[in-house]
Image (cartoon, rainbow, N blue to C red; front, side, top):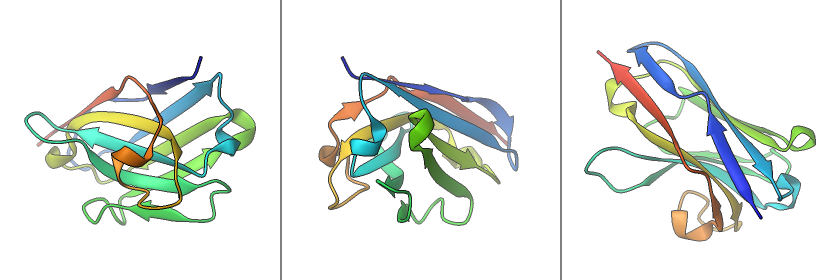
Length: 125
């Protein structure tokens, strides 16, 4: 059974930082062409935030987080990360990790097969 478990969410003030982690079990992350982070704010649709290729050589970011967020993966540890700096109140959302993505459209949720349960990130002004 595939399980993705996120951690690292919390409450911070604007300008602060958080590092999210996503640990996989029952699934080898190195087999995933793409892995990604998505988020869903209250009353909004879930959106792609960042994605990374199998070997980590290619990364993809939503325009709203470019230059502030960094996605990485450690296949040996079967873990993916999202370093979030210069956080803004509009970054407040539940953040989900996803695996099993195709090489096409890496920031589209329909391209992913496995999802975590989400972790809450709240940024106050």
